[in-house]
Amino acid sequence: MSRGDWLREVPDGSLVLTLHIQPGAKKTEFVGLHGEAMKVRLAAPPVDGKANAALCAYLARFCGVGRSAVTLISGEASRAKRVRIDGPEGEAIARLRALG
Image (cartoon, helix red, strand yellow):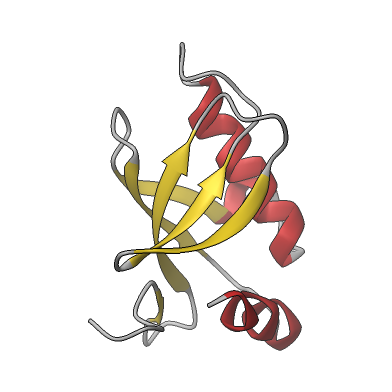
């Protein structure tokens, strides 16, 4: 994978993000590349799906889409996750690309 492969546009116009999650951090933020994934620190604890919910809410806000447009594809109980974002605008895609 190359540097930008953590962010992939699919033919239907949605995005698929490959992420490495660090739950229980002081604040929620993108950190930078972690191998072939983008590392995200989450303030939420990794219990009862709270970290997954916080991740989806954070990505929805960051991309300017509704919470229902963000779907966890894989990694529900793992730090390695794949997330799909439906309908992001060009500005949101550019902001994500600028991260890594």
